[in-house]
Length: 263
Image 1 (cartoon, rainbow, N blue to C red):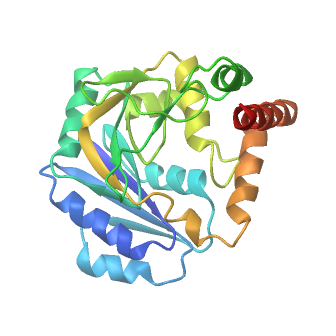
Image 2 (image 1 turned 180 degrees about the vertical axis):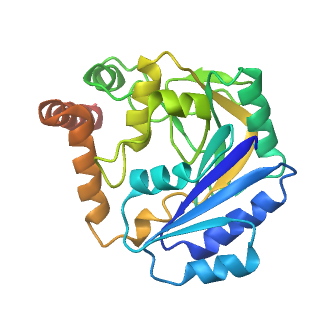
């Protein structure tokens, strides 16, 4: 099997069905694993009726992004692993383009696609690994795209340092080398942390603008209780940076925003 698709659902049943229907339009041999992270809405029976070809895994509770995807990926067998958010819809032919790119790079790179938001704009889905130096460059040296997400070239494939994990194609040989997603946080920074490990291993990430996917951004996180997403974000940031660096970066960003507003 060339490609295994891993999807984690959390209270996004209708979007997950739209995603699965879009995958059915792709003329590729692939296996699809859907894990439900404790939605408690009976999605399993619904999906099995319409999509009998998928492998469905039910978690009784929400174990978080990384644990969910690690468990889903463990149930796959394909040579390439495609992590897809449940709030993605694939435009026809895009997965073929991703797979062709991965093979072109001899399965020695991760490839990601162009994400289009509901308003038609292209999502700024690439980033440099966040660091104090990047924050200083962004705010005090006027070097844009040094810290925050940015839009890569839309004309040709380009190498980027990091990418959001909404659509993330990993050759299995790389997955086995780099290891699973970090399970120390429930949500956020899992893509940043994984991209850091890829960089340390000298494995490039290629942005493929011709592979286009629609992204209903943040559908699962919006289902969390009020204030819970921010708490998870802060916890994940502290784990990634360490407490001292986290607070130092937070101060630099706060100061930079103040200076920019005054300016």
